[in-house]
Image (cartoon, rainbow, N blue to C red; front, top):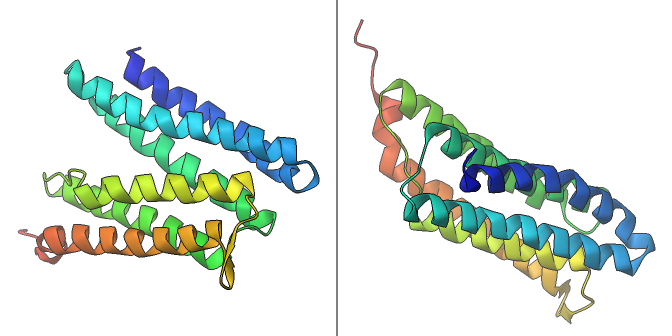
Length: 183
C-alpha cells in the first residue's frame, strides 16, 4: 500500500476516535482539545495524501476512492457528533452532508458517461473551510461575536462555500445530467 493510500486509511481510522472524543467533550474540556487534535491530524492527512500522490505521480483509482471516502466519512462523522452534543445545527450538517452525497452522485453519473468530475478550486476551498469550522466547533472555544459563537459563524461560512462549490460543479457538468440515452 502506498503512503498516500495509507494516509487515507489512517483518516478513516481516526474518525471514530475523534467522534468518541467529541461525544465526551461537553463533560471534559480535555476531551474537546484531544478531539480537536485528532481531527486536525486526520484533516492534515487529506492534504498530505493528495500532495504526495501528485508529487510522486502515484495517483490510482484505489487512492482516489479512498481519499474521497475518507474525506466524506471524516466530515460526516464529526458533524454527526457535533449535532449530537448540540454544538452544531442539524441544518448545517444536513446541507454539508447533502452536498457531499449530491456531488458523489454527479461523479457517478459522469462516470457512466465516461466523463470525470475533477476537483475544482471551490472544492478545495470547501474542504479547507469545513475542516477549520469543524475544528473550532470541536475545540469549544468560548468566543462570541454578536449573536453567535465564532465556530457557529465559521460553520455558516462553510455552508455558503459548500453551496457555492456545489453550484460550481453543477454549472460545469450540467451537460452530463441532460444527455439522453442513445439506445
